[in-house]
Length: 341
Image (cartoon, rainbow, N blue to C red; front, top):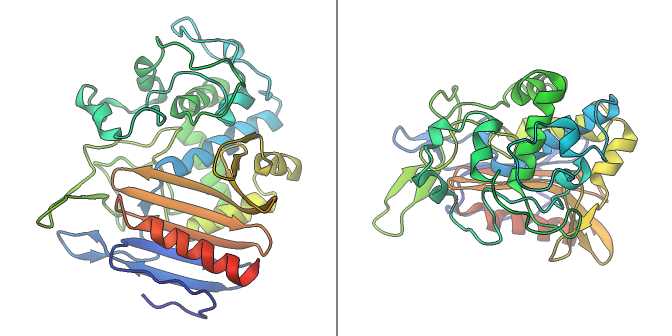
């Protein structure tokens, strides 16, 4: 690990496996790579390694929906019954796009993080290799009751973004993956980003690792998450591609400035001094925005990609381990806050 132009006081230990990139508009402030993309063959992680994003790729789904709103094909007030076949859905059909984007819909979640902690448990009865399309997830929640009335409060919802992916498919006539690949990844020059099948990973892609509690045991996460990414998460990317995304997004290459500002604006309060926009978390310190960020957690995956508002600094931490990245992210936050805020 060789930090360059070291202006940030960041310590990265051997507990971390992945890549780190911190930039401003003109230069790289810090970079680091550590651990193995493939432990068996001792292939090292690099800055160009492709890593899984988990829920971090909800941002791409949110951008895609907002593009369709700009084209007049949807609105923030469009309800489920207006854009989906709701004949098999027993929860409220009056949930709208705004509520789905901001996690305030109240619909049942197939992985409810308020009451569930282990994502792997979902696949004990439902084979993960069958989860290949958004519609494959519907049986996991379509017959459940609403958690609360639409718009009542924030409750992080993977199911909400599954439905947004279905809406993209209904409106465009193509798979949500194809739409995002063409209208976001290609538009941003993100040539190393995609929704890759876990059993067909391309070159320079990291395997995700789950470490055991003793004797140095570990296993990959191939049986722990769906075989291919969905609208609620699971794309793969690099630290450089994430930086390209933010650059294009913030400079109006994907959406109008008005829509970008709406996605970045607090739409609903969450907890612990954070709010949520559309697909984007917002950290607020002393009543002002500290950073906008996306994050993802899965077995064998941890990532956070942030834009620090005052200085335009962008930080990308992507890991192919369940644990170890959190301390790096905290170190970066503290260092940037001390130096620039």
